[in-house]
Length: 206
Image (cartoon, rainbow, N blue to C red; front, side, top):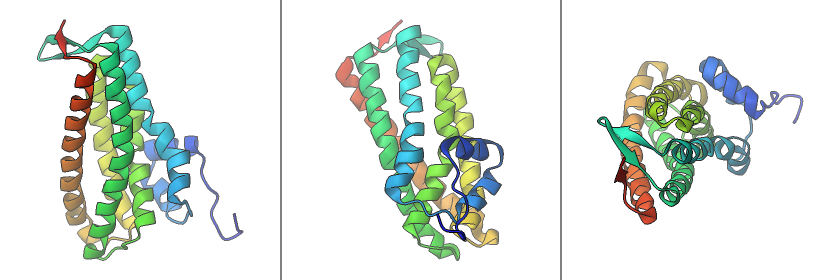
């Protein structure tokens, strides 16, 4: 680290910052030189493991979840396969969404830097990954994931001007375009995870 380069934040500092003060944390991170490999190793992979691990533990301990007041039971093998698929697709989704951000930002006065886009998406995923802790108790998993996703999207909106240098008065339009792409990716990921879970056997009503 050179004298001109800002101090790099550790994983805990990044998590705390993204949960409490995402704007300031992203502003500080804009000048950090984090390559894709280091970013995945030090931030994405450790956090992306939280939702699948906690979800599998929750299913093994509590046996399943509820859909419209109907108990649904997923066998341990299906839960493990679904968790693995969720982890792998989360890593791919970060990369894919970063490509979208890098393509969209220049259209709104911002940078087309893929490295910065990957940094933005990775940091903004913090809240939704941390919310995965509540997957240990399946009844809380979905509400927590929704709240985490909302906070992550807010951080993404805040981070577009800070990291991608998108014009502030055009950031909402850029964000809307990226949001549409994110929804498509989330839907595709959900289908892949459901398909993967079927290899462990069908869902059973409890």
